[in-house]
Each structure stands twice: as structure tokens, then as C-alpha cells.
Image (cartoon, rainbow, N blue to C red; front, side, top):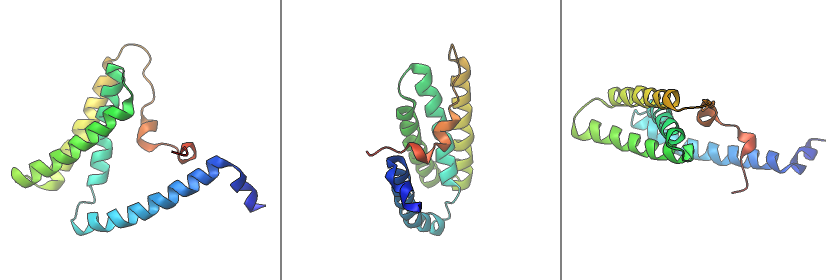
Length: 131
């Protein structure tokens, strides 16, 4: 009876994605904890919301904007904390709030229907594709 669930490809994809995600999180998580950067995952994720809003505003795929914003946020955190001698947790908090604010502003000024872009932040594991 339980094996019948594996007949559905989306269930298999979700299980494989969660397995690979948990392995990756375990490896990266230990590195993040030892560097005392636990706050950075939330900071970069929420900063990428600015890229979602920008992508939606200029009419491109919001995931492209989010990816670029996420990379820039990570590089910005590293640059400001290393070369400007600003505490890392302070830079992460600034990045977090800046990205969310930019995303909300771009969504607000975009004409027409404002979509629910929060689903990009949290997602749905059942929609993982074969790729």
C-alpha cells in the first residue's frame, strides 16, 4: 500500500529533492555554524525578494532577478564585513531589510495585478521537476 505512492513521479521527485537537500544542508550547515553565520541563509533568501520584485517589474523571469540579487547579497555581505570592517550580523540584517523593502516597492509600483511572490520564497516541494 505504501509502495503505491512511488508510482507517482511527483512523489519520487519530492523525495529525491528532500534527500539531496538534506545532504547539502548538512554539509553546508556545519560550515555556516562554525563560521557563526547562521543568520546569513535568512538574510540572502529574503534579500532575493528584491530580485523577485525587480524581475516582475521589468518583465523578466522573477527567478533570474532573485538569483542575481542573492549572489549580489552574498558578495555584498562578504565585502562589507571583510573590507569595511562592519560586523557580519549587522550587514546581513541590512541586506535582509533592504532586499525585502526593494521587493515590496517594485511590486507596489508595477502596474496591473500584483501576484503573490511569497510562493517564490517558500516554494512547494511537490512541484520539483525531473531536471
